[in-house]
Length: 458
Ligand code: PHE
Image 1 (cartoon, rainbow, N blue to C red):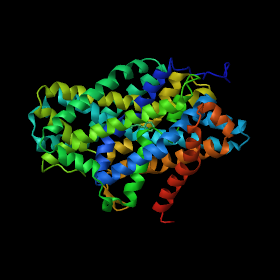
Image 2 (image 1 turned 90 degrees about the horizontal axis):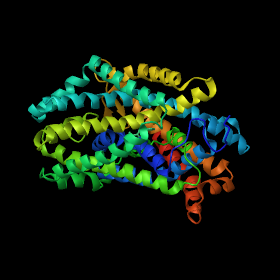
Image 3 (image 1 turned 60 degrees about the vertical axis):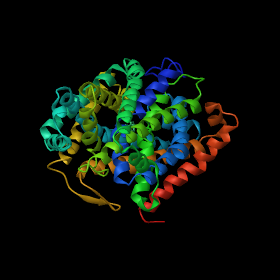
Image 4 (image 1 turned 135 degrees about the vertical axis):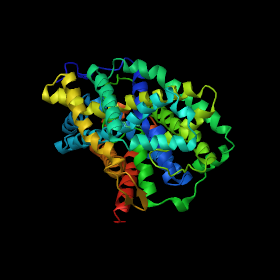
């Protein structure tokens, strides 16, 4: 299929840094700034954060290395990469199902991801026009409530965001994207630091720090452990082929271990900073609660902006950056499907982007309605969820599909591939043994045990 075996037909990153930036762009997104704080709040803080950090280090980093390695060796969409690698290793073609499940997970995640990114777009305008500035904390809460209970508005913003995503995907992931990430990611970091600075002056900073880092193990339910593990996959973009896809554009002779560690550290740092910015604000206002759910950042951060000098400007910029961070993640959610359509259905990139974008947009309508007409409560392993289909999609993808996908990737890389091949691709010396141990025994077993435990089997 490819003329030069060492380059993907879809192109290649211009350098190692281009890959690091793009993969960090995929990893850093709504998962860090929107999801991490709200699920940490729902599951009671410290102990949850500890499990999440543990999973990133012990499961996430080794699996990220495996995904990049498989992608670079296969040089195609995850479906075809898995098929050709299975063949090369003398294994059954059924391993390509990892790719199929990943494509499905990517669709489902993007369908709700785009709706939440749409909230971000709405907030760019609400902050820029000063609506937020004039409101007090109760008013800010109401503004959020009004937005999400209006399906027409949500649909309009969801549509805008899907169009943005399709435009970049249609042009090819490399163009424009590399540049966007290079400038905007550091800017996001600076703004987060400013927000943490604000949080330090709320008088409730130590409460926030304690909530995030002081583990109370009595709050660690089965649901909390599953969600923390699932979030480690979600936030690092693992288990569905996004990182495998980006790995397929990676030049030879790049250290997979080093790049994976850099990406994971950057991602974790952004999440922790978001938590440090948000919880002190939560504890400063009695009408706010850590367990407020998906609206948490939209009800807290505008308060900070309303009270700081230059807040209207910084607030607008911050929501722009959240949208950009979501944008660089959303394209990686759909790229595996698009690359497959190009490879196997002979579509042009533009057609492939439009069709997969339209399909995702349609599924997204279920999430649009989840905050109003289709909202319902249900009990998820002891935690009450309020937003019907949205919560179900989120639990199904982040807590089940990604960890299972990641476990299968670990099994393939650790057990199905000849050690000679993985060693050659990873180019590690002594630390190869450590990676091999983690990928063969630790990562798959932990995922398996947590999932079995949830279904009450052990
Ligand atoms: N990692 C992204 C985030 O944290 C979401 C994502 C998940 C992207 C899976 C790609 C694949 O927002």
